[in-house]
Amino acid sequence: MRARNRLLTSCVSLCVAIPFATPALAQQTDRPASVLDLVAQEYQPIGIRLGNIRIDPELDARIEYDSNIYAEATDKDDDWKTVISPRLTGTYDAGTVKMTARAAGTFRRFFSFKRENSSAGLADLKLGWQPNEGTSIQGTGGWERAIEDRGDPEARNFQTIGPRRIDVLHGTLNVAHEMGRLGFDAEAAARRLDHVSSIDAERDHAVYSGSARLRYRLSGLVSIFGQGFVNRRDFRLATDTSGINRDATTYGGRGGVAIDPGGTLRGDFGVGVFRFDPSDPTLKGRTGLSVEGSMTFQPTQRIAFTLDAFQGDVATLRAGAIARTDSRLQIGMQSEARHNLRWSLAAFYRRTNFVGTPVKERTIGGLFEAEYLINRLFSVAATVRYGDRSSDDPTESYTRLRGGVELRVRF
Image 1 (tube, rainbow, N blue to C red):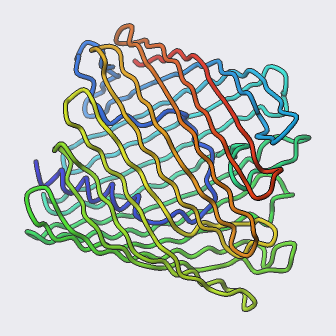
Image 2 (image 1 turned 90 degrees about the vertical axis):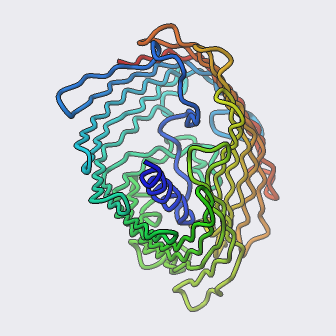
């Protein structure tokens, strides 16, 4: 069992180890992932079982107020919206082989600003094979219709048309192998972003990523690792509107510590360097600090503290920028106040540096959620999110508050 936990940690840590190579897309679920297991069995969904197959239907329905729907510095527009999010997950578990299929949608409808309405969705398939306790192979592929959030650093600022819609095709292959104290993980991934609107054609690109990690176990829970990574960005158009070739390769390495799940402290954290090499001969390469980490401290069964950190190269299409570096930090707390009442609180900081321009942006904010479980099928939740961005470009600064109530259905 411990070996399986180690393999799971390896897969998860490797998935988050590759630095972000594309602009951030809007989350299709607006909820922080829970790190706590619900204690009371009577509140856990049963799902639908068909032999080795389990099907889990879910539905969230939310009404939310947004104080600044366009993330504007002045003359802010506010509105109410409904958000309907159905999800369906099917899992086949035959011991050494496990398959998970997902389909989900997020439908946002505004009360007054109808042009901001959006429909997001995803469909993917994950196949895992564990031939023995020391080896795991996992492949994932799928499609997503992502909706750009108006508060993203490079979001569309035209208010006469809706937010950007992006079709994303992705595939990943991961291999993990354990050899006594030594462990090895490797991952290859491809991602293609196709913006639906023709005016965003210069943003269409593919990302090809690879990562390899070698781990050495110091004790039953603690390992040290060394890791190398490479990302290649290949834009569909040869140049953007300014005549610059945006293709680039980013590579680098990190070293750090990984702690297996099951203990009071778990997760991993790595620090290293990255090298950004643009394909355009008129642009200069650059070297920077690379940080990636996600840690959870759970002193008791009912409370947990989380830390997520990132710094590295991110793709950019901002006019005049030759590169972009993001630094992000989020600190959170999750708790089960009672067997059917849980809540989470988080504060975050993001700093975006557009290299080649004087523009730097700093965003601070927080989120809060409380969920009350009525019974096995239904729960209600209240959510609040706040963001405050300051920028060297005054037109890019904004404050934004979003809050709502939600009904959640689990079968």
